[in-house]
Length: 331
Image (tube, rainbow, N blue to C red; front, side, top):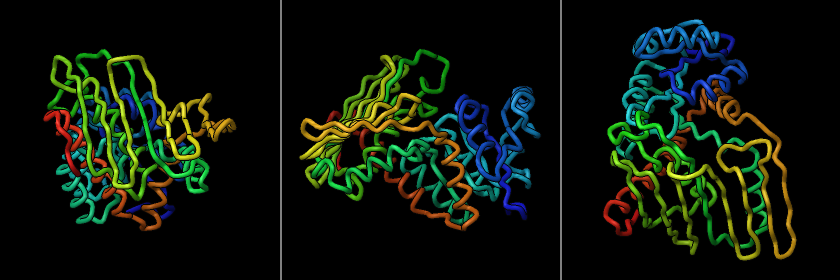
């Protein structure tokens, strides 16, 4: 239950870098919400974070935080393979859940999470914050207005060089690898642009590192509507991200489709005419939390949110299967 004044008390499950750099600020700067507790397996670490970030409560176990009846919602920023068990535990404890991406490691994981959310009548949302940036409003409008003609191709890349052997991204058992960490964004962006059409077949190639996780994955996605999409994700080379959308009469390019910075811009090209849209900086994490809070307050729990995450995970599963078999996989 929320407080009578509709203020959201949030708990942070796990002392992750993305929670510290992005989501704690996003929650605290959202309307009528604040982080009131944080949990780590290391109580001293939780206490240090709580002291540094002005968080009132610190817990030495995740379950202790879930047992706190004053907490309305939690952000789960644990290694990928720990998202399902702790999200389900939080939902069963009556908490609404905002979970870092990817929601799970397999589609079966996500199905179990959805079942728990529905059984407990709680909101389950995947933290795809990128979609709350205004550039996607411009992209949708340009496409719907016919600025690029008939959509034919989408290409998206998200890469950065990552060299931390002790990190969970190096560990297969924790859901490591570039596809789950970065490629989940690429698949989600592609699917949002091509809606309502969805991929019907994928063909993928992965390069594994010494621990067995994919360090680089590239995939071709085919659609029934004569649309193709290409994604590239990697921890193996210099950071880059871009989105290119091509149609029969023009194309749209974004130089920062996932994490827009002050120099982010959209370019619309039609023949020899070019329009550049400079994007105003905005905190997409705050916007995501605002939307989450609104859905809970308004009782708009929208199972379709998590259902969309399930569809995303099915595409990721197919990409993984194709890379392993080196054969196309149908969806």
